[in-house]
Amino acid sequence: MTRIYNTQPPGNVLVSAEDVAKTFPSADGGSLDVLDGVNLSIREGEVVALLGRSGSGKSTLLRILAGLIPPSSGDVRYGGVPIEEAAPAVAMVFQSFALMPWLSVVENVELGLRASGVPRRERRRRALEAIDQIGLDGFEAAYPRELSGGMAQRVGFARAFVQRPDLLLMDEPFSALDALTGENLRSELMSVWQERELAGQSICIVTHSIEEAVQLADRVLILGGTPGAIQAEIPIHIPRPRDKRSPTFEAAVD
Ligand code: ADP
Ligand code: MG
Image (cartoon, rainbow, N blue to C red; front, side, top):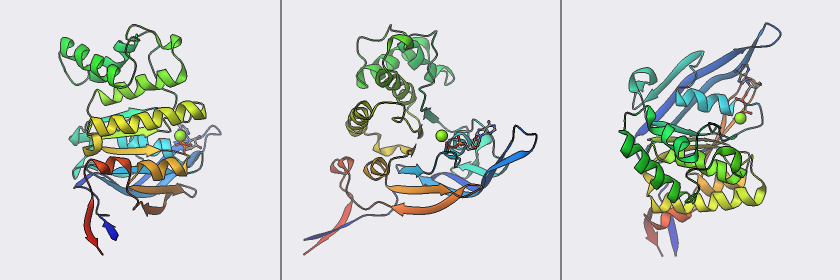
């Protein structure tokens, strides 16, 4: 029996980058063209992996999609609305964890909710729930310096998950961890995603690992060139574990 898997992207376009370019001032007083002519879109519920060499502009592109830095030219739109007006719910997980060293684990996770106006008691409740889900139960009062890399990145994930963002951006979230820790955290996260039904959420993950990209993503984008642009786009057809919850095959023929 041959199964024909549904390769249609899951929903409407959530975010699009149109002809995005980014130029930074360089140390010698000149300028560095990092991105030019970047076009991409991510649909609701879609998991996209972004691959590219070191220095190809992956982190820069994620920051632009998150609205942390503006593009030099081009547009970023959420649901067709320019990012400045759309105020999208976007959370980011950083390679280097980016925890506040003077705040405890629970306070770091709560930070994710500060800007969104969630009342204090509700913030604490949701933060504790996220900490529990990510396997950090008992470490609520610990400080970042007391945590291993793997645990620190769990805090990074909890801080992002607690926001229940429409788009979760992850910038090489496992690459600062040793191979075994990274592998363990990745497979644990895949089950957390399934349990929490985060499959409805859009994810863009930057990675160096082709294996990770194929395992996690619906579609792989390759960023390359100088300045960087999307060089290739690879749909992934193989069924992934999260498909077990909601089968995506649309036809089965003998
Ligand atoms: P990647 O994440 O793919 O390794 P980055 O987006 O971090 O690449 O960086 C792409 C290029 O842009 C690099 O040459 C980097 O040095 C440069 N760059 C990144 N951020 C800045 C900045 N704020 N100012 C100047 N140059 C930057
Ligand atoms: Mg980077």
